[in-house]
Image (cartoon, rainbow, N blue to C red):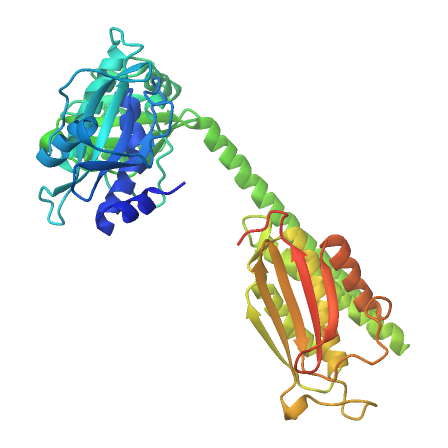
Length: 511
């Protein structure tokens, strides 16, 4: 399905700033829909010929919808959109007209102009229209809650027409909470509560306030309730800012072991401050789970830290043992084991500093490559280079992959560039400097990796499937087993040897 931006850019002459404002409307209009008990449809003019295109739609969570079918992408004109034309041309809310029928559903039409205020704060031009369509099939005498909802909705509708709703969004904030049904408090111009929904009353009761909220000065109440005086002052200042016509960030209040999230919005239809709307939500259980997750994350990081320490201890013991062994073959085997254990420890060290079970793998590869050139048993100075990015990899892939790369890099350095006096030794073609290049890229949920050197190449009798030292046997076992991938060893296009890996990334990878 086409997005709001796609539809607007394809069918209209709206400017980028206009479309950005429509995105802000669509990001915050669930509030207006729920307060209105109505569907909201965002209509934009097409070519100035009286035709309108629906680019977004939202249904209320507080009432039945007026539309069973999705209206986004629908282009209409003529008498059907006469109310939209009036709102668009005259810049006023249209409420005239008799109910209309959508199939078997009677509905009431309203049209709210969407105004984009000028940069200097002056009244700007109308760029779209919000159709507010109410399902009348369940019409009845409204309750006090419904009357307060509708009154507040009308104020926000007028602010939409004025260009003062929705307010600017603060960095990092979403529009998911709190919602109308979580709890609503309406204040007058003096900050006194004129109405509090039952859910709002219950939320404050969790904080320790058992009396009815109506008549209370909400800013002062927040100061009294909060366990932390600074937090109480912060929450109170949020309410006072909304009364001044500002839109402050959301605040949290902690009291008596409970936590409440508040969002304060100014009510200033036609530019006149008449009070504020405060949405509240009891998020005690959410914050309790957050604290549990933080504790769990800290525990996991501590486990990775201890595993890293233990692996480093094992590597130190093996290194000590290697120094005491007189047989050269045994010493080489122990030194190789030290390098393998150290490469795994490197992954756990990275995980101990991460907030989740995933690592930024490029840094690990660079460190392993640097170590390979330092510890490899060769007299040749070999350069290491990485092309492309591995990205972020889950721990279960990173642990095995780092061992595979460690073996391949050591193999490339030690066997691709033997000492000059060794039988059959040959340097890079054309006198090029010895080097190993690690290349990585992602394609169709797979990680493609190559380790290529410009050394002497594979022996003529080399059998990639059966032959090879212990290191290559480990590589094949890890790639085909733990990583469920494939590996191919082949002559490089420009000489030397190339190892090509293909690893599936379906196990929770991230880009």
